[in-house]
Length: 242
Image (cartoon, rainbow, N blue to C red):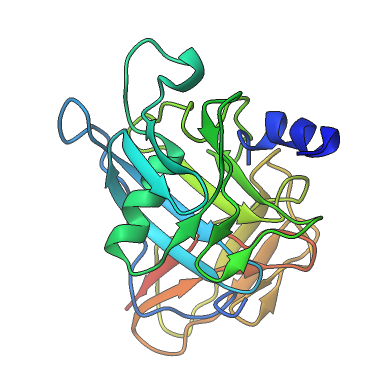
């Protein structure tokens, strides 16, 4: 592995569109605030590929042994590389659990010197010589790897393709609305909380304050994502329209 690749690994192995801006049938889910038991936590997991959202939802996960074709079988429970004194759920274990339960696969080599996997492929999206899979937790890049970071219940885990230095869009706004009345949704860069102008949300475009106004035309549940070139698409935000 090259020196530059190892440098990237230290900061991002570890630290990490077709559906964007469209209406979804399902509702966004919020993770429960407490673990289900002593070793399992519910976390919000999202996987954003280069041209689509591969997975978004709540995952019950715990630290466990992970097996990949490229890396073999190794424990992935937060104690890797002595990062934590006790085991627990991790971002890579959450990815592995979601893949097993939702009919997609992932792969990545294991590096002994980091005691961690480098995620190189999720579903059909593989890294290239310049674009890699990156990890963020609550929109921040961890300073340890995906098997070293010990997750807390309710944390938001994002695996993003080519997302190392791009804005990570975050979408928020009212969760209810009325047919024929405008609803304003806001897009920010989750990394720093700054508004994002020029993002598309359900056919509308955000202004300088990051606001996009949408007028529901029918009752029901409408779910949206935000998208902008050069960014990582947002989480899903749903509005119940009456």
